[in-house]
Length: 379
Image (cartoon, rainbow, N blue to C red; front, top):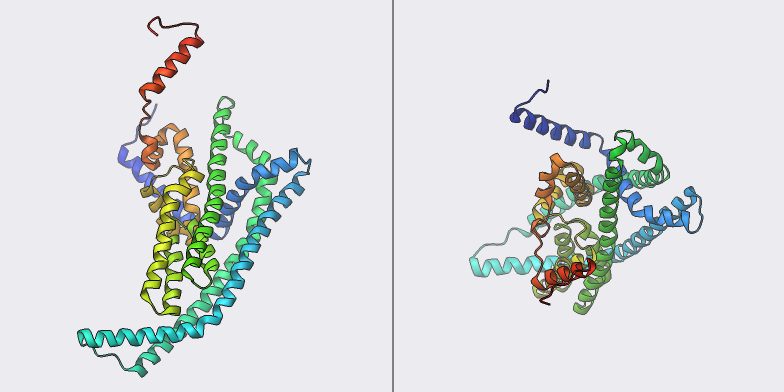
């Protein structure tokens, strides 16, 4: 006999399952987070590895090592460039400190003359600033050590996971088939292919978008005469991997730096306008043209996924949120009981019925008629 459970019981079990999933993700973060990055990089490097194996007849381990080495070299060059620019940027700290002091003095004079607000005691202000800097330094050192340790762990585990996932990909595929009946394996293969295409198109398209946005940001800052324009342009473009929030951080840093070095508010406003213009081009032209509709997630679902990912895994969760929710949508669209959730995540343009124009419909009917050997006597 089939036992029918009430709806509220099903929803309660579903909520408990989600809570257990979030708890598991937070508890096993040191293992699951590198594994998630390894899975994304493995899907990205899979076509290159296959080409090396089939076209150049490389053994599988050698093909995987060449693919991983290529990624490490590219990321290492970017990290080297950013670190060199950052070291050069530290030489400006003394001048920035003096300019900030002048800006504070000007702001205090303005508040005193316009609103009659007396400036605070300069000695107290300096002591509070020094105390705040000491606390900030202690916190920064502790967080830097923690982040560095975590980054080293991730950088060590991710290549290992990528190698294992690519090397044992056939074995893992057979493992999945053990859970599926033979008559349904073609659907599983199609689902896995769709997930692979979604992840590959997202990551490869994101890399292209980062390069284009870096060129536009750097060009705009160079036209304004901003120091370290290339550094800020590249750094802001890399932050675009964090949707919606990354561009805010990327624009605020050069704006504050420009205000501190020049002392003119209009220069900082121009920097922000440059980033706003580039963001407009990226959101309306660059990303839709490069990525297309492969990752068709509506902005509301993307923002919710971004917040949940940041709460569960921090910055890494924010980076992983969009590709993970795109993979979930592919699975939801295939599994019939979960199709309403796939509809909820879909972009509005994807849910609208596609209407064919009259000319296109007439041409289609004409072609079909010719193909069947039929001809309309009124034509």
